Image 1 (tube, one colour):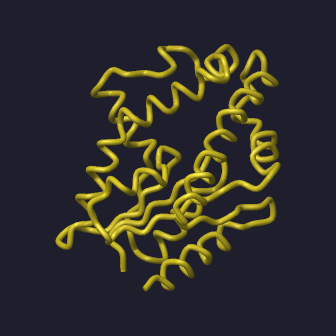
Image 2: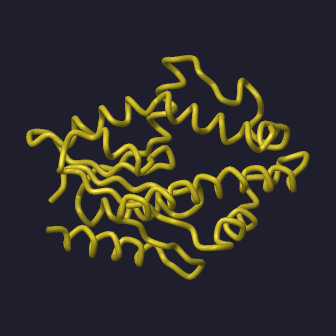
Length: 198
C-alpha cells in the first residue's frame, strides 16, 4: 500500500468528505493543505487577503488577480507540502492522506518517491455553480453576494480546468464528479484505482 495518498480538486467538490471516509477505511491520518497554509501564514506573514474580510476580498478583487494571488500563495507553501509528502513516503514513516486544492498534478515530478498515489477530483459542467449557490452560509454575510459568487466561481473553475488539463496531458488519475456522485462513490473509485496499480 502507498504511504501517501494525495487527493486534489477544487473547493466544494467533496475532497474533504471523501478523504475522511477513505481515511476511516484505511486507518490513515488525514491532513489538509489548508492547514499547511494556515501554518505558513502564521510563520511567514504572507496574507493574500491582506487583512480584508474574505467576502470583501472576493467581491472587490479582479478575477485575474484572484487567480494570480491563489497561484502565488500555493507556490509559496508548495515546498512545505512536498517536504511533508517526501517525509511520509519514506519506508520508516507513518502513512497519510493529504487533500487540498493546493495540490497540482505538475507537482508529482518533484516528489522523490514511488510510494505516493495521487488522484484529482474534476467537477463536471455546472457542478461548482450548483454547490456554491446552495452554500448560503458561505456568502450570506456579503454586501454583494452575486459578485462574490461570480468571482469565487471564476477562480474555482480556472483551477478545475487547469488541473484537468494537467491530468489529461500526463495521464494522471482523476475522477469526474457529477451532481449525483456521492462521497462513497468517490471513495470506491479511488480504492478501485489504488488497488489496480501494478
